[in-house]
Image 1: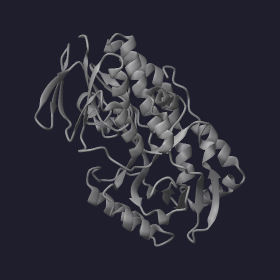
Image 2: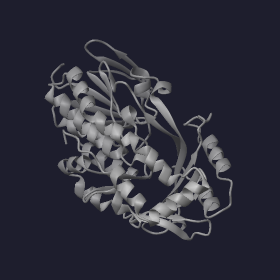
Image 3: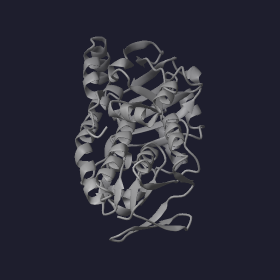
Image 4: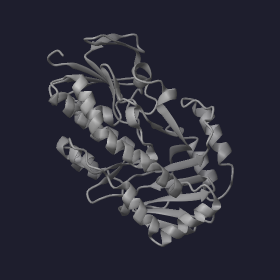
Length: 388
């Protein structure tokens, strides 16, 4: 590989800027391209745990992340009359030093740590990839063309990079029988410092309200084994579908739906995992959700993105830029951590979205008896990644 190799990173959320930060400090020339016209604000709360905390500290962003952290203290389950029926402290999910932060805030901090050293292009995306033995030719939606030594897809669950160069989406995504939506809503709809959830069989509606932020985040999820015919880019169809599934008038569901479907940051998708036999093909590799999405129900997506990005940059540097060695070591090291995170989702979905009325009752009883707290603490404790 040439001296000062050029690496294109597709995606500027969490994994992309983290990877760029470490690549530039190891003698590479990364360029980041992002399909959205700007960084996307808002989103749900994400967790920075274990190795990802140490990586953030080495990046010098840990104090800022702690300043912008949420202050969620309890997961509260309520009935239709808004009476608390069960709950647990959020401390059981994290070890000392772990951080919960809004996804948009995390992306902003990582971008600011990287922007002075790395070229970012917003409002453009990869349209075509042609691999040669010595380089990768890339054509962008804008019509521009460029050549890079490597291309890394950090472009999320519906990764175009993965579709073009590694594995088609139909083979990569594994539907877990749940759909979800998030959106920004008024803080008055939620309990302060809490995630408040209202369940009916196979459904949950809730409010995530951090006292450190002006607004709140609505959360909806429902069980549906079928793969629904709704395009992940068709927001109007998604909003109509969500309203049809949550047509009851109980609790605060009508008010949450009204505000959520009016929010320009509305997000809807299937809960799907990315499971691939390999995270790379030739000179193209994947990082974060693009390569190994564990879903938001795992609570591990942000940490895996940070850890994976740091590990990939570390292995590329250790291998002197030899992508064949680096990609293999990166995947071999991280895959066990990814598999554990992906396996945790069944327990999470049973707790948050019980399938029947009996399961809701049982969840509440187990919570009161402290049994569920013990299980949750075991499921969510992070596994260390060697390179961190």
